[in-house]
Image 1 (cartoon, rainbow, N blue to C red):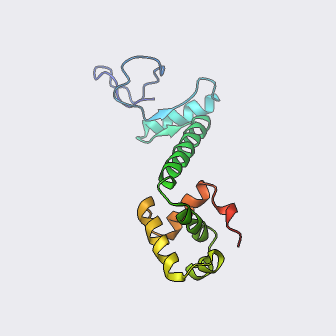
Image 2: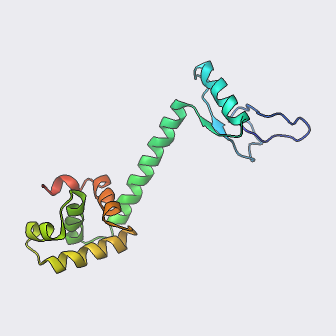
Image 3: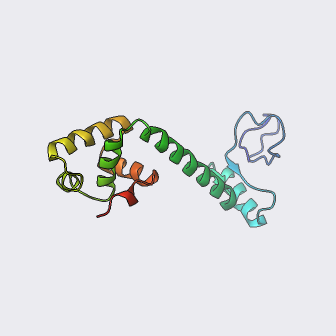
Amino acid sequence: MSAGCPRRHRPDVVLPDIRMPGLEEGADGFLLKADDPRELLNGVRAVGAGGAYLSPRVAGRVVAGMRAHRAAHSHRSLERLTEREREVLAGPGTGLSNAEIASWLHLVEGTVKAHVSAVLAKLGARNRVEAAISAYEAGLLPRFPR
């Protein structure tokens, strides 16, 4: 669905086929031909009111694509970490403090703090929570029991 089209017609909503040339202006929504007709109406109303619309089936595909992209990005970021940094990263992912991580890995707490700082910098994470999300997405959490 597109709110933009040739100016001479000035419709509020256009429903072109995705394979149709001339969609350079972008689309404000996507529906599948096999969607329920009620989805078509919901989409037309949303775009006509100035919003955007994805049918549930399209939204599912978009979310799956986002998850795959995010997982691939997390994996690439984690490749920059040393093995010890990966071990330390698993700690915040399971809610362990620096002292608990140090005890688990038989390290001094100051060393753990240095590793956590290096991990945050390499991942571009703003805090331990973002680092923990990366650890979860990379499958590191099961390696580090609580």
